[in-house]
Image (cartoon, rainbow, N blue to C red; front, side, top):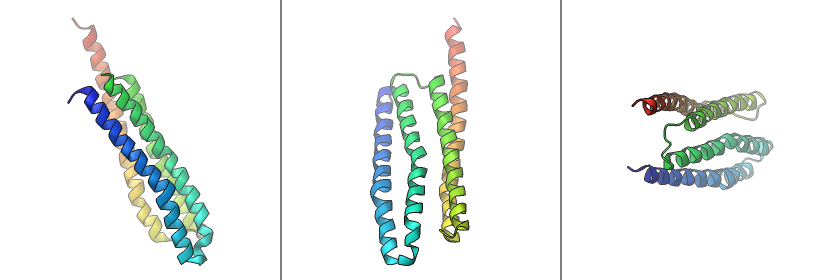
Length: 159
């Protein structure tokens, strides 16, 4: 597959992820929260803390999509193995690890403040695991891209 074609596909996928994320964070989560609030009025004090918590946890996710867009742009310019991509992947790794930690600690705090249920905390482990997995994979990719960049620079100087 050609670099420009690959870049276009990556950008289409990232655009789709961004749109789906916006729909989930702007429409699905608030509507679902409001329906829970009306069905269980005794839990209405949990609506805004959880909504704000989920919105804040979405900020690193959208930042990762933007960083991925920049990586796709570099790939389209035939700069797949460059220090810029290695740094962007390292940022993605850090943001994913931060978001996983933030989500885990936030769930524990909500549990301790009696704003959550233990089963919600257990279910959040899936999200935390996914965040840690993304962090590890992007850290490995960052390292590999950096090593490939070094090899490419060495081969450029070889006659």
